[in-house]
Length: 129
Image (cartoon, rainbow, N blue to C red; front, side, top):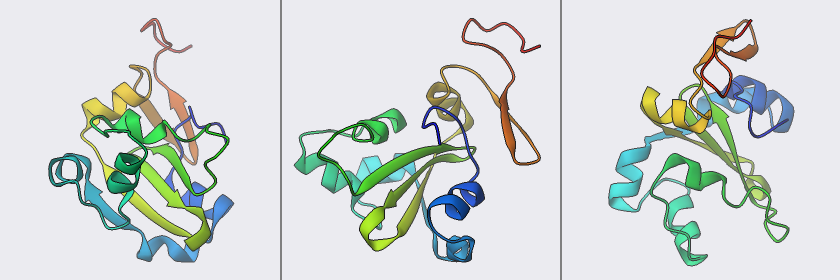
């Protein structure tokens, strides 16, 4: 899956884990996690040990392409960012407000149609046709 696309949590679990894990997925408000430095899977603390200060939701994607990172993967979802810890098959959703989700999408709003996410505008802000 392209990490620049927005997917539903259900799609991610179906592809990378098991949809049965959906009730086990923990959620936390992104701003609370950043303010306290705490989250259930210690993602913020892990990034800090790598010298990465997580301040914006986009910071959670900084390790996705790192060759030495095999554990943590971040994905855009309509309600924020889903992060998986691959070895333990654990998932956490960082919930962000709609403005922050828009920033993750390069300033485009995401429209969910069935199981397909479509940008409502292109990068220049022009309506999608």
